[in-house]
Image (tube, rainbow over all chains, first blue to last red; front, side, top):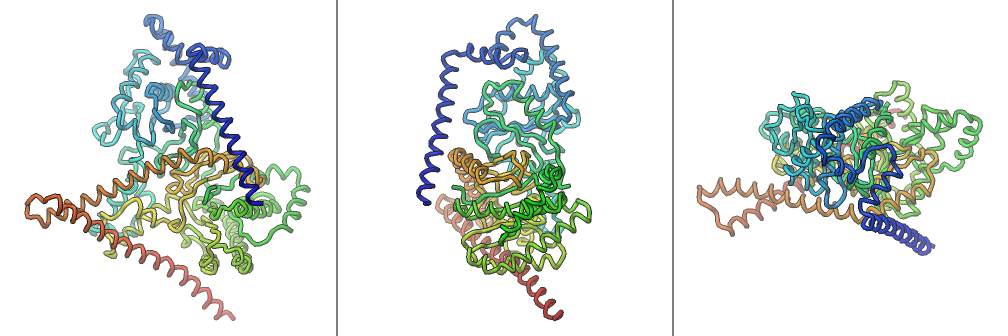
Length: 285
Length: 346
């Protein structure tokens, strides 16, 4: 009996795998053959009046003189979108659970987040690729900012924080949008380091083990930068796991999944924000 | 197949509210389901539901009993459930008392069914800070934990007076205690050691975490342990959870298995690297003290590294042994108190 069940299960799984493979193959094929045509077609079908897709954006960007007014109205639209939400997260995490992350798409997402009115954006991948290529990401964000928001750099000046980025501490005071680049190092490892610090203090008789409490650890893990915990994490990719994303900080974080971050659209992000907007937290009550 | 599944059973109050409209039916369902109740302690299911309709608590009770049976049929040996969060103490006093009363009943019933538990080899563990609970409930829990301690076919972990942040903090506190006692050094603190100090130190990390009723957050549950687990959020309310929902979740897990395994491997490598780094730092320290400023050659360095690693491991072993004893004492003391109180009464 158990054997039969086992076989049945295997069959079901195999079927599901075949379906999945077929779907991704079809998608890839259509994309390859049609190229931007396919994307534009899909965009035309799915989002008639909505924002342009990536390929269209590139076309639009070339005439600089005309794009200025365009970006202005788009920016106003995004800001209005943010205001229209019931509640807007202060801190959004963007988590890429895919191989070979695309910097341009992530930069787009960061810029959209800020345009909508999010103050802190964290970018994470479990290989630590973004952190290793921090400056590349920063450049890309600057570029996309100009492309999407126009040249008005003073208003949306970004500070990119990363490990050892202490010289940037002032930016929290100045209320500018802040981008934080995270890797698995910032997760469990930072908790262990905080624990080690506390144990050192105990070793030197500066502190007693009884004094240690949740808020003490919490303060230490905020690294004096007083950034709030992310209220929303948008996860890109097919893997349903946090893959080591800041275990301490995601206590009350809402997770919203988007299939892929490649060629991601503003609508995908806005959909996630809308989902966050309607959720209710009871906080144990 | 996942070896360890964690549940956040959400949606009982919503279910009760939904069903209140058809009260008569709710009554019937409650009574019908009552007959099925056998021995398992359910967890948060009924606890949340007590605020709803008086008979609805029975539904989730039977259902989680069923869930455990399904898990057994699917040969999943370990289940962890979120029964009562520290945050739940914020509810009104009436409600909290009600929930604790219910827990009392459930543990009592569990103890009555001792033989059944033994027959199925069910080991019950309670994760959380028991000190926050009334003494008689603590004693009951200690009794339940101690009587099922030797069973080893399946494991039911009940998170009671639990939040994950509290658990991590408690682990740090235990390590600081070890430092105070002179058992370990502050430099011995590592990810692996912290994991060993958590309430869940006897279980492997869950492979799969299921949350029902469409909420998409962890609510301070097993944050540390699920960092490389498959998370499945299902929109079905807990009392309406069926076998097929469970199968769906397991299928999701199996589809994700490969990539999660890869991420886990990566994480393990990183962890080993960090440990090596810590040991190297220890070596550098040691050589500076001994070396009189002379640069050490590679061979001496290697020897020192071995020495450092071995002595660290020995310290950690001792410390973990002491910690285990401390925890066992806590339970056996509670149990002893209960017995003596009982004797003095009779």
